[in-house]
Amino acid sequence: MNDRKPVRNGATPGPRPGATLLTIVACGVLLTLGALFFVWQRFQFVRVGFEVGALRQQQVELLERIEPLAVEAEYLSRPERIDALARGRLGMAPPAPSQVIVVDTDSGGAQ
Image 1 (cartoon, rainbow, N blue to C red):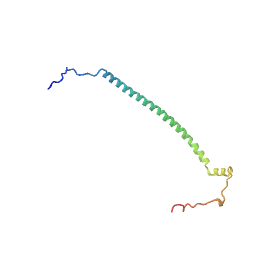
Image 2: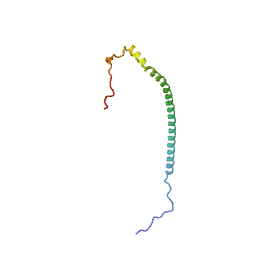
Image 3: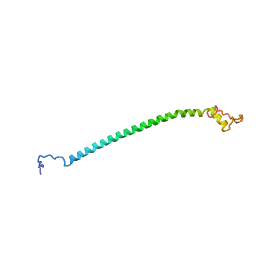
Image 4: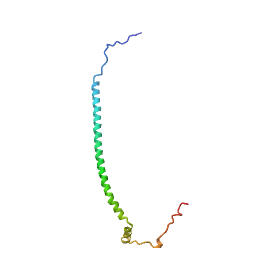
């Protein structure tokens, strides 16, 4: 039997050659990626801010256009105006009593 243990010379193994350089390069890459992400994020924030400003301006312009259009729609849909156009331009007349059909809605489908 061999009860001998390997003899050490007391020196502890140091870092591998190039491991320190690799650590420095990895930290530099991570810092660079973090900085690039920060810059990209700020750029996007500013770009979206400009888009929001432009859309708000467009909203204001569209809201200003709604009121005159609503007034015009109200004017054009007046029953007196429609009646005058129907009689004048289209040659329509009120229906004769024989053309009127009264529909009884009380005794329809609900029983």
